[in-house]
Image 1 (cartoon, rainbow, N blue to C red):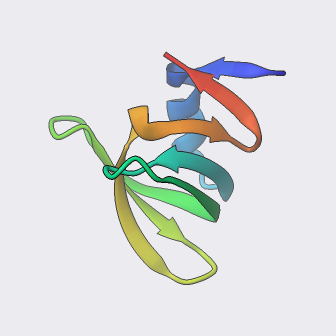
Image 2 (image 1 turned 135 degrees about the horizontal axis):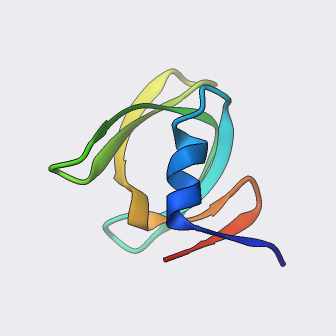
Length: 76
């Protein structure tokens, strides 16, 4: 299985290309977001705003909650 470091994940997220991610929520649930793009990263809060293109929802998450991007495992 292929894996990438979280710094590489941040470079991927800065790209305008849509990606698929899997992440943990605050409640510990695992979610899969398909075709999403990063809108803004707040360095001081450590949060990122993501737009889900299929539903036009905007959600907020922390980069450390992402454990898979485009079926590639992410490690710290």
